[in-house]
Image (tube, rainbow, N blue to C red):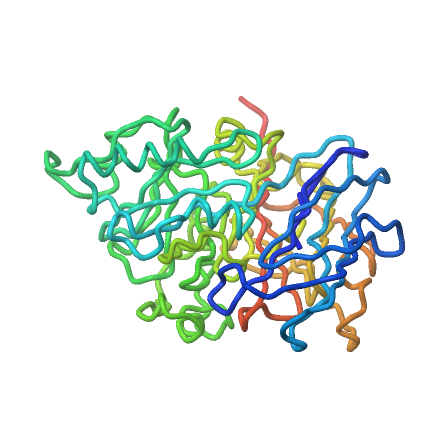
Length: 460
């Protein structure tokens, strides 16, 4: 059951109840006598019957975090789950999302995969707020590109469902996705390029209208030094997770590493972790100011499946312009697919920020997490630039054998989510967390964009 992540008190929002088959398409299963309510509160709707999907609307007046509860009698398979909680929704006077989407997906049209209706799937099945279909630029002709732009324009519904124009490019330096502020612009024609590399691509783009996001990090691309300071203005974000595996750090033993993820799905069989400085943490250690997203790299026309990676963007409205500005400002985070609400701040500054302090100043960390299932752990990792070492400065493991204890869905339920430390070195901090149960055998993780804290130096 999918709802918006934030709304004003009394403001109407859609409630989407989705039943999927084993192939992640809408099922034919029939449910009857459904009851939709707020746990411990009012009944929203009774006697709901549907097959595949059902949409209704609701309002909540009381500020705070809420989840809706749905029960129904399955008619044709008693083994089907008939009870579900929605993702959390924050009722607040100043809603900013986050909006949820998949910025990296493919379909049949450009010989990049299968599936012919990626925008319909993203909107009606995954219930995304925004999506980008990013065909491989080598499959383009001018005619195909014009058709792609047309489809992106036609699928857009400003304020409700935002389509973002983009494409994927691949070099020996790795794969990158290119995004456009507006639904206009040309594809990259490599026929007249003396070199086929990232710098040649950037020479044809406008950083007021475009940005790029490195994809598939942690794979053995060359040259070894993947991240360059002269490209910083073009790269506000980096993809920390996709269906292929974890790009956070070199950790081949991690349950989301390429070695493990390729055993779970049919599309990601070839990648292995490499012990080179090509991961997200390596980019941060080299001084790059990148925020993070996650997205699927799905090749079946099924963008936004809740196991392959989703991007969360804080913005005032769900429009291309607002989302583009928020991505440029790094007001983002990524999850493996679940719509987990994360609020991570240092001295009141939100994720993606750079703040300044003097030696000995107190740094106050605030954490609030509202999950879709029991939270397993919450951690803050820090890199001090003077030592170059990563360390865990905050770790809370949520211990509860009762897997259905609803209170464990929110981290703030169990402890005070703020602590302090004294500033003594330029550093970068980010939050990482996991939930207890898997989704279709995929573990559930999330990662915030970092917050950089630098010394406030007096000008001479």
